[in-house]
Amino acid sequence: MSDWFKASIDFQKQMLDAQGRALDFGGQAKTAGEAMVQAQEATRKAAEANLAAWQAWTRIWGVGPW
Image 1 (cartoon, rainbow, N blue to C red):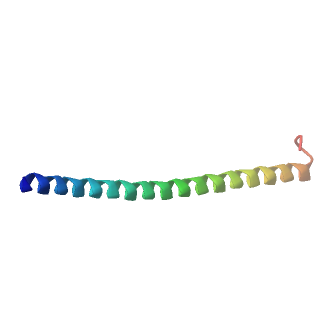
Image 2: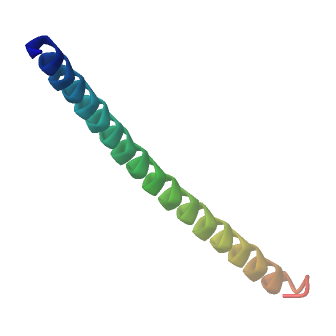
Image 3: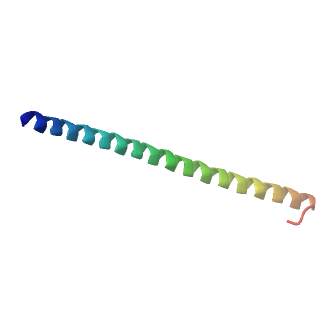
């Protein structure tokens, strides 16, 4: 009976280790996702600034609907 008990304890330890690794991976994925969102936001801001610059340029030269 002690062999079965030891085997079940070992299995539970393995399951806890696997869950810990899964949580670590989840944390890394969350961090990577946050970095991706920040990069997308920076890209959006850069595109808006580029559009505003082109609109200002066309106003200087009196062309375009802006």
